[in-house]
Structures are given as structure tokens and as C-alpha cells.
Image (cartoon, rainbow, N blue to C red; front, side, top):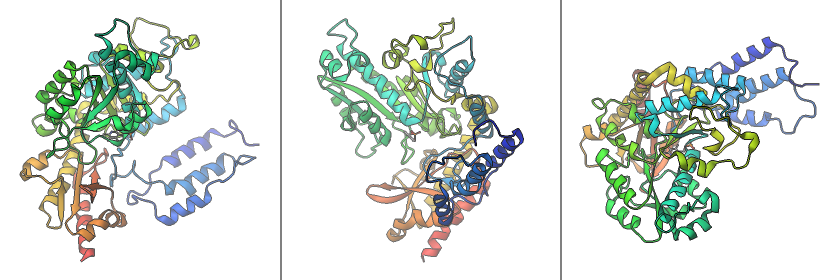
Length: 502
Ligand SMILES: *Cc1c(COP(=O)(O)O)cnc(C)c1O
């Protein structure tokens, strides 16, 4: 009978080493035949007798592994904003598995895990130039989507309480009464989420939370949809019987553009929201990392990230630019009291925290999950290993490659950089963060562009649409980015698809 425990230590170590060995860096995508093969070999019924360790390792190694894409291993992968995993983060992630540590309750006399988690989050604040003391509600999530859910949940709690403050001294809590009753007591008949070019997950979060996808309203400028039309925003905020969350896209996933352009704009937004009891949530899944850059080298990006500390809450992704393995996002909020009102596990004596002199809140009372993975450790390890300058260096290389691609496109007769803009070349390049959106000028090539690029099997890009037409998108988000090696290859591929078209 096969059951865990009978394996030899040598077999285990050898297996782990082998599974970690990298795939050929040339292969960005597995060939279709390999995918077919793998699908064919998937075990289709639960085995009555297990196959055992040796055979299962062979199955993972030989049948399945070649059929996974190399997004986390290859720097030639520019699809979506996938990120990679720094070497130390990968090691720490294995450590997490080995320790099988739960970070549900803060138990300072039993484990240091929740201390590590809280420290990882405060180091993260420092990385992002945010004062950890100003962001006492901080937690890790599975990703930016979950973090947006947490953000809107906190915002919902806050704006209803604000709206009712002038009617009653009682605390009107959505967490306590539910949304219908809380809105009734607060005299609110509409909750709106006002934003510009939101990520799709914001609508998903609105749906999950009972606010509804229809509550997400874009208030972008006509000529610059990523920027707030302050007049429209003000008109909506001041509608009677409504309560609002303002969601700032920093940066926007299609173009990489930021919703605000500096301290003054954010301050204006803050003042307006304070006037109407609105909550400001920043979706900075990848854009928030722009705060590690130096002003004198990346003025436009640092400008766009300035003032984000005036928000009430911030979403960030670990598995994007932070380059830790998947299953890691983070959430920061300035409102410690809101956290417990939304997430507190009531009446669970067996989960009681031993309240020490430290101020670490039990993760289960400030986030979505109870039991969960110790996803803080890879973040902690990577921040300790590379520090602020290491992260700045990674991001600078990614930006340099993105701008190299954008420059090539701007100078090409066959391609067009998006969004269209009247600004001069230097200004456009200076605004490029890690996303390059473009299209082929020739319509028929443009329709096939993404497939043609992927068919070279040298680089991977993802498709999107812009103003109703097909468009192509590079997202550079891997620590392995090497401009001297990657840029010539990208240019060669972009040129080759033009040549083969003619
Ligand atoms: C990627 C992304 C998300 C969703 O993140 P997940 O980690 O996939 O849940 C949300 N907002 C923005 C701006 C993003 O780029």
C-alpha cells in the first residue's frame, strides 16, 4: 500500500531538485503536441491503490512539467503582468511548504510567524515610501482581486458610517446589520464606486460585496479617459442620499497610465472626498511599485505615484512586480478600527488571541481568510535579500526595456504606439512604465499580430483591444529582464512578422 511516510529521504531530495531544474529558456510556450500528450496522460480516475511516490514524480516531471508555460522562469514572457519569482522568494516558498505554518491567529508565545508577517508588511510599507504607523490595517491576500474585495468592503463600512453620523450616534455597521438594513438606517439609497478605466476585478469585487457591478461608474475625461473629470466627479459625489467610494487606478492595466499626476491632484481628490464622506481606494496592483523609483531618473512615474499616501486604502500585488510566487497580494489601510468591524470572527473563543504588548492583530480578524498560507515569508525574504536598491534596480531594468520597445515602435513605419497622443517622443517615452500597448498599421496584419508574434515561439505577448480595434501588449514584469539581451530579440521578432507578412 502506498501511503506517506515510507519514502526515503534521498528520493525526496532528488525529486525536489529535479522538479526545480529549469526548462530550456528558449521555450516560452509548450508545443501543442506536448499539451495534448499531457492532457492524455492526466490520471482520469481516483486510483484505488496510489501510484506511489516514484511513479508520481515521474508523472509530474515527464508528463506534466513540459506542458506548463515558462512564465515564471523565462524573461521572454511578456503576457499579462505575470511577474516572476526571485531566487530567494522561490527558496522561501519551499520553506513555507516544508514548515506548513498557519498564520491565522497571533500566538506570540507559540510562533513567530505572525510577527514575520507583520514585519514583512511594514518593510513593504517602507519599500513603498509609506509610514508603517499610518497603515495599521495591513494584510496579505491571495492577489490584487482579493485585495480589492477587502478594500471595497472597508470602504463600504466606512461610507455608510459617515453617511449616518449626522443622523444618529449609534454606529451603523454593514458588518453588523447587512447592507440593506445599514443603508436604510443611514438614509442612503445608492452606493457608487467612482473610478476611471478600472481593472475588471473592481466590478467583480463590487458584485461579490452586494454593491453590484452597475455601481462602478467611470468618470474619466473625454480626451483622457484614465484621468478624473473633477467636475463630473463632484456632481456625483454631492448627489443626495448617495455614498461613494472613489477608486484610483494606479496604474491602469491596458496602457499603464496613472489616474492622478501628483500630490496636488491627490490632495484635491482627498479634500473632495472628505467633504462628502467618501473613501479613496487605490488599485495599485503593479503601479504602486513605482514609488521605489528616484525622482531625478523617473520623474513622470514618481510624479504619478506621489500623493497616493492620501488614500484610505491601497491594493498591491506580490506576484506581479514584487516577484514572489503566485498567491500573494497585499492590502494596506489607514483605518485600524474598520478592519475589525468588517472581518472580526465573533464568538470564537478557541481562536482567541493572546493579547501581548505588541499591536499585531490576528490575521483572521483583519482579512478574508481564517486558516491560510504563510505567504508573507517569500516577501520578507526577498525584501531582506535585495533591499530597496535591489527592487529599484529590477524595476529600472524593466522600465528601460519597456521604453526600448516603445522607442522602437515609435520609430517604426509599420507600428503605432497606443494610446495616440499629441505629446512629443521624449514625453511619451518618459510616461511609459512597464506596459507597451501598440498595433500594426496594416489592418490585416494587426488582426493576426498577437498570434504571429506568439508563433515565432521566441516571445509571448498578450492581445487586447483599443478603441474597438485589436491591439497588442507587452507587460514587462520579470526580475530576469536583461535589456542588452532581450531588446534585440524583441526587435528581431517585431521585424520578422512584418517581413513574413510582405
Ligand atoms: C492584475 C491586476 C488586478 C488583479 O490581480 P490578481 O492578482 O490577478 O487578482 C487588479 N488590478 C490591477 C490594476 C491589476 O493589474
